[in-house]
Image 1 (cartoon, rainbow, N blue to C red):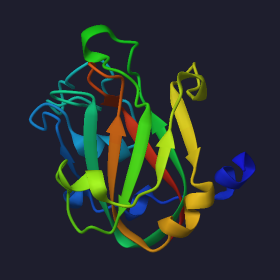
Image 2 (image 1 turned 180 degrees about the vertical axis):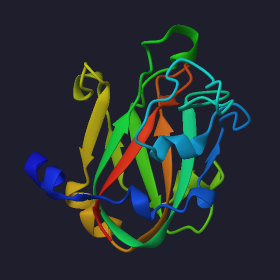
Image 3 (image 1 turned 60 degrees about the vertical axis):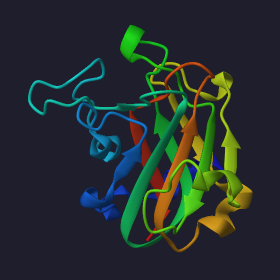
Length: 176
């Protein structure tokens, strides 16, 4: 499976930057578009050049909802997440412990909408995260059929109860 992920293409270039959004994060400080870039401008806080941080962190609780739209329908085989949660003090937050995907809803869902919808869900344990750069690669596996012809995607990330959830990068691997 891991070798398959290496052969798949980075499909982040098919993301429409103006159609990326998030709920329950302070978008005046955190730049949700930075989740899909290759660089880490500022892992610890606001970048002097951009005035925003190079990550997003949930505002009020452990839930963070990210919406992304693609220029063309894509097949998602793997999702690579990077989170420096738990490593940087007050801005650290926690790494996501659960990932839930909602395909082709057209816009950012409301938290009330996501409870009753059929969706692929993945549990992320601390042991799954690589230590040097805290990254996890999620193989869509049995959910791959549900993740074909994806025009847009709502991603619900849940962290440790009582802590804010932090996300630094998202990389989608698959085909366009």
